[in-house]
Image (cartoon, rainbow over all chains, first blue to last red; front, side, top):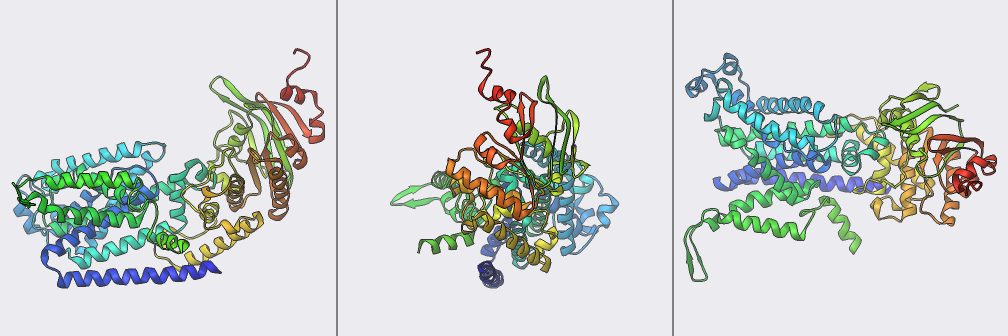
Amino acid sequence: MVQDIIFTKQRLINLAIIITAIWFTWFAQNFFDEYTVRIINNVAIFIILAVSYNLINGVTGQFSLEPNGFVAIGAYVTAILLVDAEAMEYQYYIEDPYPWVLALQTNFLWALILSGVISALLALSLSFPVFRVRGDYLAIVTLGFGFIIRILAINSPEITNGSLGINDIPEYSNLYWTGGIAILTVMAILNIIYSKFGRAMKAVRDDEDAATAMGINTFKIKTLAFTTSAFFEGVGGGLLAALLTSISPDLFTFFLTFQLLIIIVLGGLGSTTGAILGTIFVMAGLEWMRFLDEPMDFMGIQTDAMPGMRMVVFSLILIVVMLFAREGLMGKKELKDLFKKKKANK
Amino acid sequence: MILEVCNVTKKFGGVTAIKDTSFHVKAKEIYGLIGPNGAGKTTMFNIITGNYEPTEGSIKFHGQKIDGIKPHKIVHRGIARTFQNIRLFKSMTVLENILIGFDYQASYTYFEAILRLPRFFKEEKRVRQRAFEIMQVLGIAEFADEMATSLSYGQQRKVEIARALAANPQLLLLDEPAAGMNPNETNELAELFFKIRDEFDITILLIEHDMKFVNKLCDRVMVLDYGKTIFEGDIKDAIKDEEVIKAYLGDFKHA
């Protein structure tokens, strides 16, 4: 059948992309300078966050504002599990840490897995009250959830060291970890999207009543999408903690969610390719535009340093993109849809 | 007896949408639910599919009570429906739309999908083949990879019917399938329904306004007016019945 041939061809292309991505990760880690590696690390982590955020927000169409809460949980869980007792006792001078906080200690892999699992369990418990009713309750509840997590982090110094945050987290994150997990995340999310579960998620987004009338348990599908994205956001948070080596509640404000929302809307809500492109565009673009903040010599006109200038230019670019590509860079299309289009035109 | 509706009453606040209505549908039958606008036909559909719970009375499917069961579970029991205004999933192709109907029949778990284990491929292949079979019966196989909403109105209807058939129903509920179609298309559709009934071995319950269409297609009908049953029985008697004529054309005596 024609279908099978397309399947195999698609799989070969996928394999090629994965091998290229792995090779690039290895190459970048070994040959790029420290500053570039740092940016690529950041991009990789944000790809994890954006792609998983896109699953609930874009693919399932449930407007949610949760990432900062789950990233914070992931980051704190990883930090607590990685920092050893001696370093903790030295840092925690607001309150003495609880004995169990001191005792918990694992390697990096387990810390990441636990970060994801704890985020996912919290998401699961949130989804029971939220998805029982329809409407925009998810946005309100998740917005509140983000604030609550931050306030809890500030007000429980026995666990999180309060507003001082946790420092001296061992710097385990390198491109092998961030890039590797980013590749695995994208593969997992794409595997979900191109299965009956992904189809059901899109069906819920397009028309919830019709989805129910086709025998889809919409509550279960929404819960699956939400829990899955919380899992990967927790893992991403863990990677972030081990990359930055110090975390504090201020890192996980609503701005983080806002940034991810810009990324996925810019890339095209519902498109995984779009989420990846959006991340590269926003994260790398913001770095590259740093020169705008510095004093400039523009066609003979000398200007002083203008801190914040790059944000002005960046916002202008965003407006232009949204004016000319209403659905984002990719719309709802994926990479393979672009190939299909080209063939049809020829 | 595949479907039994026993003394169903549905009230929305002070409004009685359906009043003490009973009827039954036999296996392999094409049963029509007719009546003027606002008679409560679509409400009846929503009660059968579990979207509304009846205020009084009960619904039995294969002798088992199904009122109070969640809508998606009723689909699993074997009742599928189409909508009055076509409701296809607009971001999906025709094939994907139909695959949605197979959702509960493709038996692989979430983790099997993420890890792409053998059962995923086996099941996906199976449901895709079944989807193509259904598309071939309805004559829409050539549009498989086109966006569902880019098709013509008549084709979209067929896609919606194919999607409902994919859910493997024993009872198919069709809400005004011939709405907005010209006489030629209507005739073609009637033939299609006979074909579907024989090919998939199913019972059809449909709502329709087009009396010619109903006359051609249905074995028995029920006529509703303002939530009340005014006629139940053979279609040939229905069009001669005084009450039915009154409901459709108005009461001449008082005019």
